[in-house]
Image 1 (cartoon, helix red, strand yellow):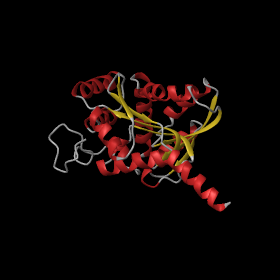
Image 2: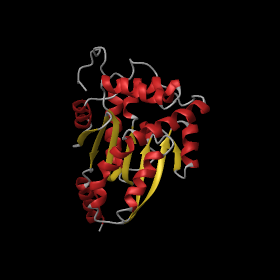
Image 3: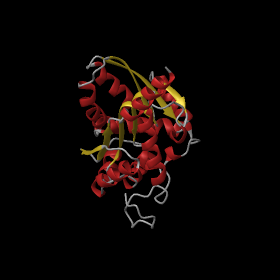
Image 4: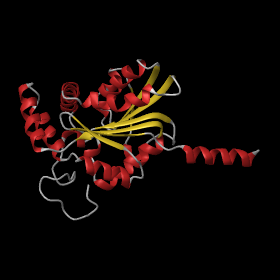
Length: 255
């Protein structure tokens, strides 16, 4: 993403300029929300969105120095499909994930709860959790809904919340992907709203260097990688050493 505040040329990502998606509205019709989230979960399964997130976390899960119970927060969890997949991967490494989803759309939160996820109504702009209180923090296909300054604040806030890992997954902007998702969604019999919003989501998506720039602006050092079917994932392990040093210093002062 360019640092310039000038209007971007046609075809570049600009969330506020390219239109409005159904899931931008927390008061959207519940039936439409249910239909679109079911379609998104299906697209994630078929076209790699879920696999990309799991693959980003696998190395961290594999080399974990602590097994047992961990916590995971998914910001903008939708129907909770990705946290379930991550929990299954964690179990293969001897880690039991306690998953929580944060959602501002009430119908989405109800769907996540029905699928067995603990879901909290809230907003990524005001995360209702203290710093370093969650092992893994995840957000998938949410960042492209945000203006650039808000996206940077979110990344910094997710970093401050996590103890072990942060994953920010989104869509990689490309014209072939826009055409492909329209055709695929039509062939799969998905709702017209899903087809329209899938294309718009890709138009609002990122290039790899733009995601890297957002992470740098937020003060985090992330590994950003592209995956098949226009998926883009940033993953990093938060630097908690300075915070631990501060806590240690305070404890010494209190003795």
